Amino acid sequence: MLGVDDFALRKRQRYGTVLIALERRSPVALLSDRTAESLAQWLRAHPGVQVIARDRSTAYADGARQGAPSATQVADRFHVFQNLREALDQVFLTQSRALDAVNVLMHQQPAVYLYPAANSAAQFLAVCSSVKHVK
Figure 1 (tube, rainbow, N blue to C red):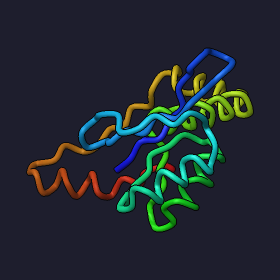
Figure 2: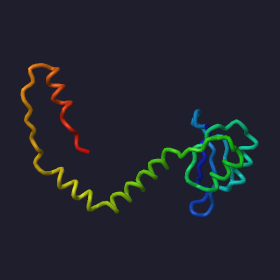
Figure 3: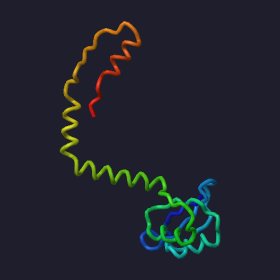
Figure 4: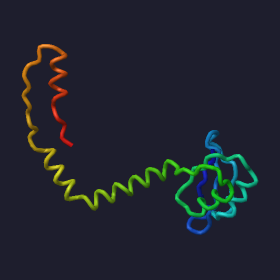
């Protein structure tokens, strides 16, 4: 399993690529740029990588596809959470009226349901199973 990410040699001016052995949690190589070709060359020279965890960079996707075509590409943890945050931001922005309505309903007085007293656990379970759940 190989982690692929960029790092700054000089912030906003020059970036490279760091390759990390994820099982050992240690750097394996530093590449001098962030190009698909550099990653593909390294992967071809080091066969056997089965899983590549990477960010959303198209260069890294292309490099992984070219250098290790049989490897499975996955999003790294940071980018999974970043994707989730962006999706939730969209939901909150586009569905704010519906979410406000749900919020109002949730803060109203809850309904009280009265069930006949159950004489046994079996009767209680029968009453519970007869209640229809609202979706």
